[in-house]
Length: 158
Image 1 (cartoon, helix red, strand yellow):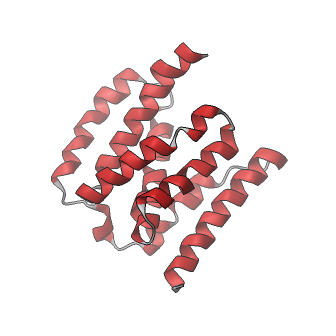
Image 2 (tube, rainbow, N blue to C red; image 1 turned 120 degrees about the vertical axis):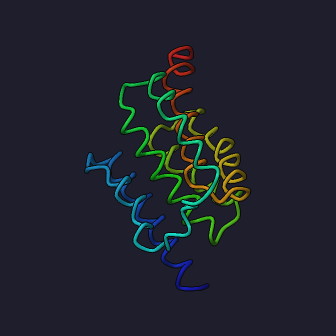
């Protein structure tokens, strides 16, 4: 196993431990910080900054209008998750494995059926990332599904 894989597994383990300590002991949730750590390790070309798919960022104002409450927090969380899981972990692991790894933190935090179902959108985000190499596109897709969930589906199902 290469050094790179060890660093990925170490960061993922720290993420899981952080979430467990937050949930069971009330310690601060450091997940956002840990999710953004790959910015230190990734070369800038991994972000797909020169991609035509970055036009998807034009959807941000529409998403904001649909769900202005905590929009900045949702945006940052979606970016951090996509950076970590797609931009970082998918360098070494398959979409299927990364989608499974993506699901575990959601299950730890929320522990309901819906958190298990995050596996399926994650597969889609991984597919889109493999096809486009655009972190911006998968972030907008992720943010869109979060807005859909928090604005429309969750209120209906509660």
